[in-house]
Image (cartoon, rainbow, N blue to C red; front, side):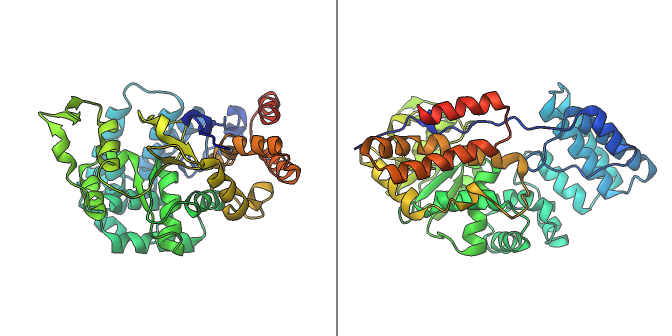
Length: 396
């Protein structure tokens, strides 16, 4: 039996994240500033970030040399904008970094914040200094790796990713999910990963634990928009220069002007014989060749011709995937804001397999996978009425 999932079938459902009420926050915060972490780890309300912005600014006023205060102040302003759009956000963030350059120049916090504020632009010599200053600053490892991916410094990247894995601070759920993505890929595969967690999780397993080092992970954002990253990857993969695709500032595919994303995808696809995969993500820019993407479970494989992808999906689930963590975990989760939507992704991505088990009369496998999906939905943090819809979809 052959099936081909539409790309949308495996899209992640963005789970609404609960945050504390403003009244509870006021009681908790009092006048004590709190560490402002990335919303990927812990999500708060706009009011919480606004309060932290005020509290950390007060700390800066007391001591303009306080690096911790500057870092948290910047993050509070930036992440508040994630909750409520501020029209002047870029000007505000630029102004903070400019003030930091005067108050705490040549410091770790200034170098890291400047790089982050420049949207991870590689042209930032201070980042190498920052990494050497604090190689064990695990909270900033995402920023470190974003920089090192663009410089192509494999030795330093291996060092940081190994430290990250050994620290035990990274999400066990995200590592499990990344393992299940990687383990079923064909030898020497290339996989497009969209977003930080999709990329970092795989790199940590590759560099920190030696899992599937033959696979090349390509971050889509950098591949589209970072010339330095693209040049490093072209060299690594033996590809011609992407610059040849640009004519008078216009991206061209087969002689026809196209958007940079479509051209960048095809630049890799058309110049390699290696198997190519995609991670199905809800916020991913949809490629224009979704009719050539075949679901193999948690990943989609690019293929010019149809093939029995359901058989591959079945093998992945039955023989390769590690799924016990989806039923119960005894390890504290360091990225609670992200894990629900990753766990839920198993439901749409494996729904065709569930239907196959039912239609083929494989009751044992059907009940096993059905109970796993129901358990996943039971644990996600959404309203009961939304869970009911998911339960109904599973049984449809």
